[in-house]
Image (cartoon, rainbow, N blue to C red):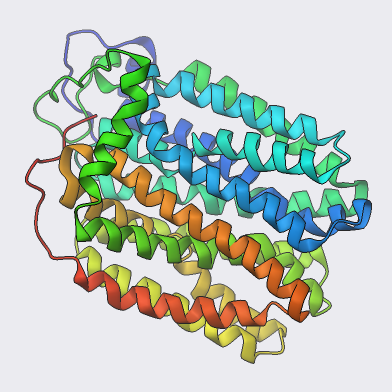
Length: 437
């Protein structure tokens, strides 16, 4: 990795430390952001191993538990557009630490909960809002501020943080929950949240100029970022952007396809796979290991997708991603959930779990230019609405029909529809070119 020209003669101590090793400080910021997003994703994914224990301890209906987790998915996305504005006004460091603290408060509160209302409040509202500030908008903001070259690769790396959280922590959550109880499992999550907050406080920097550098791959300093004059303007900015964006057909296609992405990944598989496998006699720890394997393949697939999105038409990439995902979801109900069948599903499904993110971000940037980060926040809301609908709908399917399989048929079909829909986006460049934020 090569270094970039200094904005001024002096770089800060952290930047000097990295520059002496030939590393642009942007990569350090990416590492810190990766950790923050990974821990946030772990908080989003942790309830996947809690459905069974919560049902057993409190006697709650699976559909009711799923509804609480669906609210978390919805808020996880709804915060996104406003997170982009808050990141601009208050800074990445402050917002990240606030978000990690809010998630921790929700987790701590759940240790003593005794009612569904508390589950809805703690894991639906508080954790939902907290994780919303650590979602894809955070990654898109960091990638856009710190990188001109290799931006697609960076977005791919940060998107892969979700997979890393699954690989490293979901099996541990499942094992701790089965052996010591779900509260002990959540104690591990609390430790991760605390560690991540300390790393953010120590190493996070807002912009390349703060450490005397230009963005990676840039030859000129970016234009100054517009300053929000008031908190009211900060809150209204995403609404103003949305009013303009909804006039574009491209926005609705991106929103709709990302709705399908969320429904067929986070909502259906991440939330319910452990419970689905339980219906076929597969132990929770083994099922969580399968989720971890999906995450491992996704780590490879998402980084590769970032690399590919720097080189190929994003529409064709999305066509293959949604098409292969749909075929894998339609395949699973026809298996007997044996080792080899699940291995095939894990491979093909895992490779494009979140591979859709880099080309979606690129298309949003091409279409909406300077407002792309906030517009992507609204597109990501579509992702999370889809996740919420599928998390609740799949639980309802299980309660009514005593099987999850109809949800997989529906998921497979809508993925194939998304694969075709992306070509309705015309390949043009935004009138207002993306700014460096």
